[in-house]
Every structure is written in C-alpha cells, then in structure tokens.
Image (cartoon, one colour):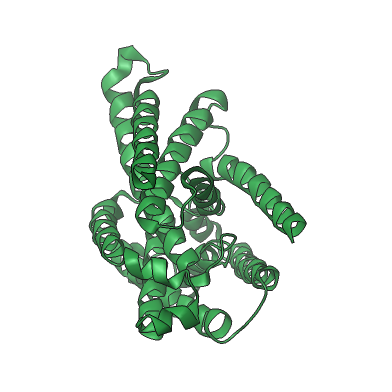
Length: 320
C-alpha cells in the first residue's frame, strides 16, 4: 500500500516535470522567430536534463555514504576543485596549450584531480574521522573558500585573454555551455545512472551506518571508494557543462525526502532528479523572462537553496 502511494507521488512529479518542461519551451515564445527560439530552448532543455540528472544522482550517492542530509558534493568543495584545476591549467600551460584547447583532455585532467580529491576527502574525514556534521560542514566551507580564493587570485595574475577564457565558467550559464562535451557527458551520465540503479540496495544498506553495512556483508571500503569516484565524475559532468550550482543538490534532495517520506533510494533517486529538472526549468524561465537574462541561474537557485539550508540548520539545532 505504501509503495503504491509513493509511486503515485512519483507519477505526480513526472507530470509536473513534463508540464514545466513544455511551459519552458513554449511560454513567452516569439512565434515570428519560432524555429530559432525553439532550437535554442531545446538545446538548453537537453543541458538541463543532463545537469539535473548528474546533480541529483551525485547528491543521493554522497548522502548515502555520509549518512547525512546536510552534506552534498558541492558543500564539500568538489565543484570548487573543478574550477581551481581548470584555471590552474591555464595559468601553468597557457590558454593556447593542448591541455586547455583540447576539451576532452582538459576534462580528463580536471576529472582525475576531482577523483583524487574525493578519495582523499573520504579517507581523511568520512572513513577515519568521527566528527559532528557541523564540523564537517565547516571543513567543507573552508575547503570551498580555500579553492575559490586561490582560483580568484590566479584570475588576478593571468592576462586578460586567459581571464576571458575562464570567466564564463565561473557561474552556471546554459548559454555558454561546452556543446562538444554534451554527447560524451550524456553517454557517461546514462551509464552512471544505470550503475546507480543497479546498486540502489547497497545505498539503502549504507544508510544504516558503516558497522551495520559491514555486518550485512558489504565490502565497505571498496563500495564507498567506487561511489566516491562516481560522485566525482557526476559533479565534473554538471560543472563542465554549465558551471557550478552549489545549492541545487541540497535543495532538491531534502525536498524529495519531505515529499516521499521514505529512505528507500528507489523512490528518492527519481524524485530528486525530477525535482532538479523542475527547479532548473523554472529558474531558467524566470531568469530569461522576469530578469531578462540580467542574472545567472546559479544565483537564483543559490539564493533559494541557501535560504533553505539556513532553515535546515536552524530546524536541526532546535530538534536537538
């Protein structure tokens, strides 16, 4: 009976997602230049589907590992690491080097750096450390600020031509996406989502905690390392396509928990992805029409998500 109720909720979310997507495509469109505008919106819609799927999947996996609803890859500085490595490559090798001009090599190098950082983060904080969530959040804020500060400093010392090469990547922008990476990222994303669906039972077990997971036969170290690599790849996909959106994952996964009222990942995963799509469709339409493209999607989402994050912190503290 409960499963049927949860399935109904998912169907409602699917319906809302489809309606929101259709409204984004056609609401406010200029019928005199229909072909041009529709082509542009369809391209952005595809990007939002990829980014929403990557962020939604990564945050679900990450919270299963950390067993905490306040922690996300972006909160721990993963997207900041991506931007740091991207700018560092330009600073070290120059904007005309193959490490920068070859998008696939550039993506591979930044991805390797993110994977190493994610594994180090897990090894130091989540595997051996028994820290409170507030301490881990503080570490995440420090790491994010640290890498963003170094990135900002490097931007000040590079020449204007090199600065322009990275400026558009600093905020999520569906107009300045790396279209050459879309096909590759799409294939990788689909493969990772399929893998995630297969290992959903492991995510359910990990929520019980490390000791219980080991007692139930899970090779904890191997599984969590694999999951952290997947989180790094998914975060890299989302950041490479449009740029960082810090609070989207935190917002959608917690709203999914509130709506679904379950800890089963077979319901939480699709709900989080659907809510990510709804948020992106709505935010992009608001930016284009209400703000007339004078701001970025990430600023709007981070405003809402940051406010919700503060609410979650206060609610958690009052509950204790």
